Length: 103
View 1 (spheres, one colour):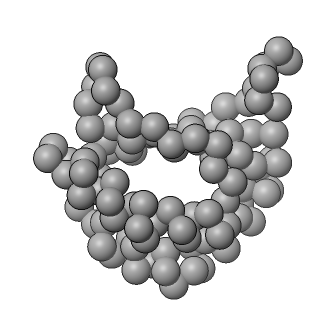
View 2 (spheres, helix red, strand yellow):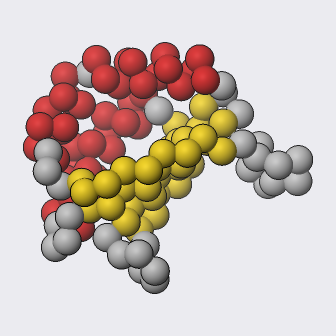
């Protein structure tokens, strides 16, 4: 198993607008194609950050699922609406340790 750990820094003053748009239009598309582990918002430290964790069996599963999501017309529509809301994006692939409760 791998986890895609994504941190998005939202433009100052746009966090509520971004979260509402993502929940209404981005999340339903993602849930059709991907496996959500967790969704978080920073409250201490760097602000305006949204963290997504997505689970995949392996890299091939990740590529297959992302391709299906990217081909979904609702995803394209969401991307157009959210354009300009994200200031920065950081992606990491993480794997669980032997003693991790998530495996």
